[in-house]
Amino acid sequence: MLRYADYDIVFQEIPDEVTLAINLSNCPNGCKGCHSPYLMGNVGEPLTEESLSGLLDRYGKAVTCVCFMGGDAAPDEVGRLAEFLRCRSAASVKVGWYSGRQDLPAGFDMRYFQYIKLGPYVENLGGLKSEQTNQRLYRIDNGKMNDITYRFWR
Image (tube, rainbow, N blue to C red; front, side):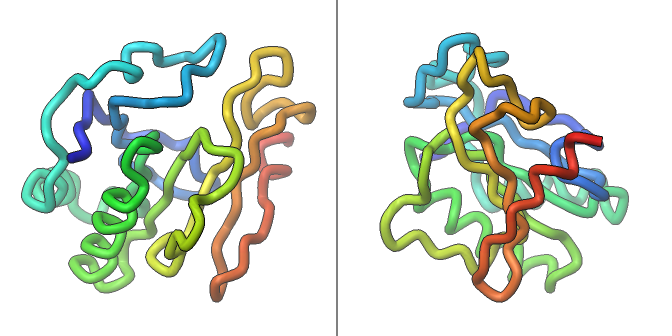
């Protein structure tokens, strides 16, 4: 079961979106220099359809995107909650996933996502704002991953 440690409304993680960023715990990646090492532990509350609905109800139309930050230990659960969001919000809320994986898991279903970030954090390469980064943010259009990482370099 996915657990979330905290969440915030953010404006930089997904370009042109007001994003409810939900920080998922139990991260298996162990990236050196991680900005959120507390998320490596199995901490926080269970992230269920009910708790997710409660967060969305709290912020209403102020949020244009929900982004799961982490969840690499249970990608199928991330996908299931993405499907729930798409069905619940009838396409009014976009869905993103920030994964520290290098590649998507085999057979991962992208159809419920509009954004996916891939790549572990490599300290000497920096995050998405660095032109040297190994990380990539993709916009998903009709099942195709379009790299939009350059949007962070302005």
